[in-house]
Length: 273
Image (cartoon, rainbow, N blue to C red; front, top):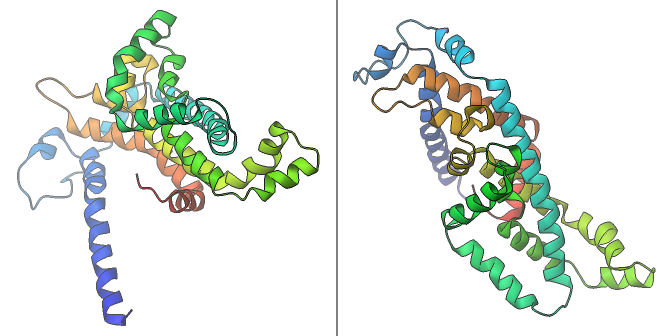
């Protein structure tokens, strides 16, 4: 590639990066403005005329972020754990084992991936309500107990492994469980990491299900609590943006700590968020 073409590509990527950062910068600046300053229409007034931290104090006083952090992080951790465990075992079964109804069952998994998730909300809510899990952590976890996408992803990962590994394991006296646990599963670690990243991001930004199953603010997640801060007629945008900035901190910290694994997982899966 010519140096001039490479320079043009870099310039375009830098410009697109700045464009993508505009909403985040607007959120930060609005969090330090007054209500009047956040709603004025002058496009040339970008920075606050007076930087105020009162919005963060007011939001921290009105919203129990410690409880919301706990609910959100616990939901993400449990969904990631359940998705990785169930998808790894199911993916291995679909990829390496032969049993009756295998193609039919995997077709049902693909069918679930092709239809909108909103279709499952009513039956899922009925099941959660009958189990008495409304306004509970188990209610938030329920849709993430299994992952159709994760099953497909891990099946493809296991199918890419050579059969000689299983044959060598059988010669060494390993049964199916030992072959899966000690030989095959460790070789799909990158796909597990990718699935964990996708599951964590999707769980963090899930809005509809927490609002339905956990209407109580003390038992809901950060995304649902932010949505409930918007008024029917008026909205205090500085306080809302201050709360959004506080809510973003966990994912920012997680990304900074696991940046390498995040990039490797996305690159390995060949997917995008």
